[in-house]
Length: 188
Image (cartoon, rainbow, N blue to C red):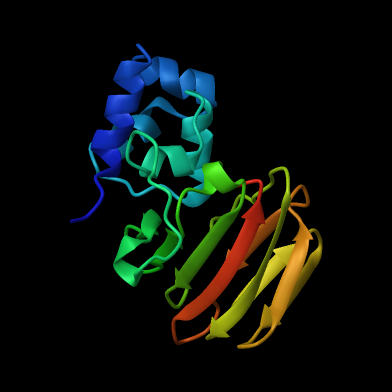
């Protein structure tokens, strides 16, 4: 079953007692962005969704995880990972998928299986947040920009940096890219 981003955003906004305009103003985004996301006419980038959720305030893990405490679990089958982000550009290209292992908030550690389709990009706006993150490319090519430095990473190559430094992820290749990453404290 596919996660309904629009319905979840509407539910959270209404639970907070906010109109679409109120949420947009608090988050510093155009009113139309909130409306089109709620109507599932626009699939927001990672940066856009985080910005919208800052108006509530809420992190992406909380947005995508079911309500209530997660049971203590040690092992996870592939189907038990939580899909945090599935982003598709209006032209049908650029899918990004971030699947999380367990309850990141409970462990103060976010472990992700990231997939970037050819041409996928976390967005023109650079990401910035508290903490540290690192990962290893397991398939394809990942272009990572951290601050003013850009590098193309191939399978087996890795990265580790302070997340306060503006950064951006992109798949410039012709085949899907997969990364196993970790972030503490949880970002999404």
